[in-house]
Image (tube, rainbow, N blue to C red; front, side, top):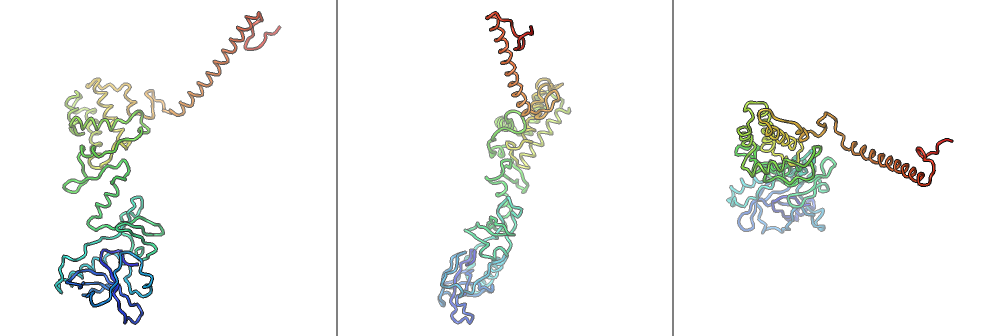
Length: 369
């Protein structure tokens, strides 16, 4: 097959080649005047080639050779990483010497990397050995498949200076895990996103949080926080001033600590709390604190509020086993129904015996004579 490269490719006839390989593969690197090019041969030597003086066959990128030419072509081996860059530099040097316009130098095409984020090899450059075997290397444009260590993996061509951004797009793009928010960086390059921007990019929650009771509160909490014009930090400061709790008390400190954890989760780790149970639990702790202090700022009243955050223990200290209790209740209801129907049957028999003048039965049996 021909090479998968952005350089143009041709076959040049060499009828006097003693080996019988009368078609020589060439990469056209820099365009000169008319039909002149700076080209590279399979030995990676660069030279000035005038296409008007030889017979030429155009070659498509990453395509099978013409059947009638198979066995007659002196072709390139698959290019290992770094070869294209070397050819580009050497072609530019020769172009300068012979006066070719430098604007025609072919642009950089990048290297092949494993593109599957689920693979342990994600982001690793595809080994040259894999690219050298046509049967183990299939491409379409900048994407393809390669057999690496006996496994077929998705691969993609990436420019060196775009590699980190490409990885981040794969990790945090639209197909990411729902708990991962969009990755943003500040002016210094550190991961950071403003809370308002993060919230505008969150996905809607699906289902109920497990194993916490009730409906999700995090989505509603942050939506109302944003609507009120607050960030987490400004809300914490405003609550400490207006709630009436002692500024240096443990309740105020705990409220600030939970707020700071949530802020780091949103702005630095850039997670989506709508899909993370630990974030839901932290928001519930804020709701718990604010609800208890609303009752009595000087001595917060926690009575009955443990249900907000406690999913495994009851207020009496009993371990919660809701599925077992549901089964037990159903069994007890069925048993009670059977007993009730038995009692009604006995009462009905006794009433029937009285109407007929017979001696009443006890427990469904005749009394002994």
